[in-house]
Length: 369
Image (cartoon, rainbow, N blue to C red):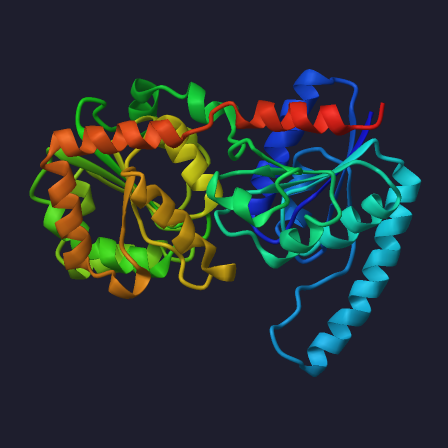
């Protein structure tokens, strides 16, 4: 069986794609894959390291108003569609999967026009423009949230949830605490603004950690992102926080073992990207969500509101984020165990730990026999 997978630009499109590929490989060990991305996206670095065959098409998203640059991008798009057609024709896939990003457009469109089964996996509550257009052509749509289903043709869309890495579920609290030198019996708050960090969260956390320094009963693991790491260290030093004398405050630039960190988290402070939320809800971790305000279609705010309305999270908009506001919400939640437990229960109810397997089964069901 030959399968083309396309998704690019951000880790939020690439990570689900890799998880789906690995899950299909477990079900069909002899399946052959080809990953299609762009030269500019993170996929150009990540996918070859995963040992997957990789090729590219040259395409960029369009600006929302007429510009000279849009004309150039339209020309590249036409060339990209032609190259995508050649890729599909040469690889002869039995099915094509798209997980988001502009690069999916030409590949899935080419495959659809060649009558090859296609599937898009939409992670967010509000779909991006590419997936909205592709939904008119593809065979099936795997929706990551129930709220997203209304944006797609009813006869094509299936609610599967978003795929998550198997290690997210298998990691154990005691192992996670040991990996970071923390106490598994203490309340633990995990903070992450995504793989690249979030400046607004980092700045607010300096004040939060200053307030938390005299209170060793709660542990904090703050993942700053590599670009923000030194700034947070400098800010804490200026605030009079000596991390060496506060073992309950752990600041890291990046984590290669995020599943272990999640395993010991009683509360998370996160952006509202779909993959991160899928992992939090699969483990039933309550969250304070600060949506990235410049996400396409403002999808992170919509993602966060869905969890807040379900009682699984509290949301603070980026423009409203201050150390005082974040400290206040943290204090409220950490001082009320019943409230935190209710949020954890609501979060777990939203989780779809079997999503990757369900999506893989859907892909195999529509593949050419």
